[in-house]
Length: 242
Image (cartoon, rainbow, N blue to C red; front, top):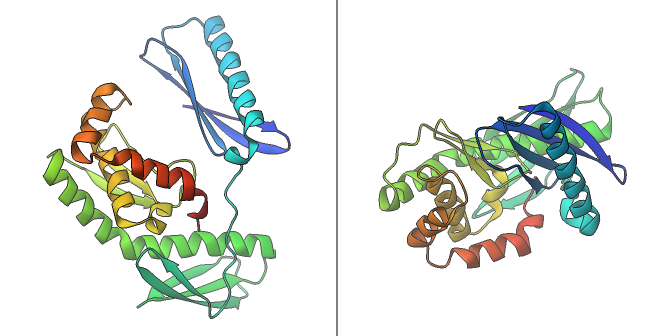
């Protein structure tokens, strides 16, 4: 994979370029990330032409709906604050230290943050967002693993090598060729039935990696009203972030 960065209206977008065994070139946009897939069989000149064409397409789409492709805002956490993530509540405790790094630990339902006093407030907010997400991911990962195992046993019966929760804003989840399912920690803000849909979506990729008719047939067989869950994500997904 090759990675480039381009700018649209002062916003930076990461472009991930994959050269694969495929027939057609295609592109997709997820917030601040553009993924481009190009047939590896093309000549260097044709690759450059397809890359340029798809980058122009991405820029046009961003111009058409800039709000859709803006990065998520970052929450600011305060000492003594209580946050609700799905069905669980967590208390935030914030302290400061002279060290250059920041750290956090989860004790019961209390997230104790120790932030570096040597960095800017903007960096402190970035550290808080990442650390809170990491603590809650560690707390909720067993539940997510159990959920995926249950849904997999009910509908797919495929081997899942690994389940990961990651503070990812470019998508809700992914399934690798090595059968690792990665979910964004953002899913933890969603209702249980929506989390089920995201798990089913990624489990279906164990059978069919492409978003083909076969893939959507597998999803619908496991969850008849999956389109309703997709509508929830489109309406409320922008409020799900750390």
